[in-house]
Length: 458
Image (tube, rainbow, N blue to C red; front, side):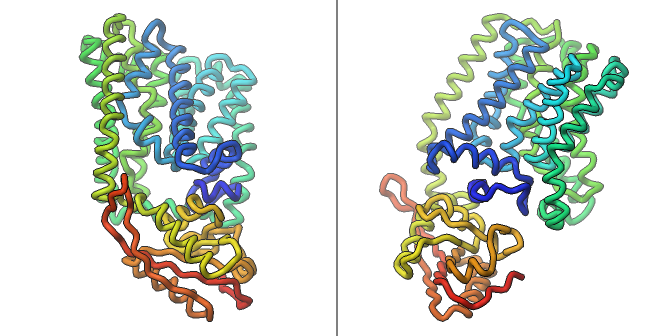
């Protein structure tokens, strides 16, 4: 997201553009450091919870809106998952915002809220195409409500649709002119081998999503002790206004599991993260749910102690990650970036403006070095429209690979073969925590100074 944010565009090869826009706005006001990125994650999660609170206020009163927020704080969505700002985390705040605007538009049919609903839904789609399920959920909820005729006969839904489409037009144009790159990526990156494999992935998506909400649900049941009939009414309310919420919730979460097997798509439980925010509201909304002040205080104490316990366990968690590593090898990012910068500046006096190779490592170089180079993802110039062959010749570039990644190293050597001044180094890097080194790993770095020969774009 940071690497993309340096070149605001109507879209990127992997995802639509909103996440990169958000990061670009943030870093136009804050320095590109770890602490400011962490602050950004926290602000995004806080905005999400704020709009959940506003939705809750439409349906419940007294301590119940705060109770809803405290229940959501018992999920990992707004702390641990929020710290990795990808396309899913973009939706963490956008889905509550879009839902609140839709509810206000449906209730009031006011021009402003109708336009806001269209804009918010379009922005959600610009965050990740998975948001199409939220838009379908809005349509289903409106169509199932007893007052659907009043809503559909008003200007409200048509204003929302027109304004939303207007917001999406630049991205639609970008899609058609770039060969639908994000759709092609999504199809191939999450394609199941068989229908049965996709079905198993959908089952895992459902089960994993339920497990995410198990702790807050059990906590709520213990503190409130509702009757089973009240629970049934909470999950599928008899009240049409609360059923509007339930329809949005169950459609947006359940429809992907139904559709994915037929499209041979693999779902993952994390993709339920942005959709569960309505469930605690439904849990406490029935009149039969009597929430005492004592129950609210007890939940606040539970969340407080859980937060303190997590904070106190952070050093142990850091040590475990230091010893056993992470899937992406994040502990090596800064050190590898430092080595790339060192080798480049030993070789040439000009700034490093381009880095290629392993996407995770290349974007780490973009973030952690003072030169802030642009990156090419996995040697594919078509995925880096800000790059040209002429610029590669003029500026030169660095390539960084994990030495164990034979494909990346092979491509790096192919590039180096046409550079008479190419420098190829294998460096050993070990992450450091409090002065204690972790497991060393080898990385291959290729320095390609500027040249005048052509670089093939294919």
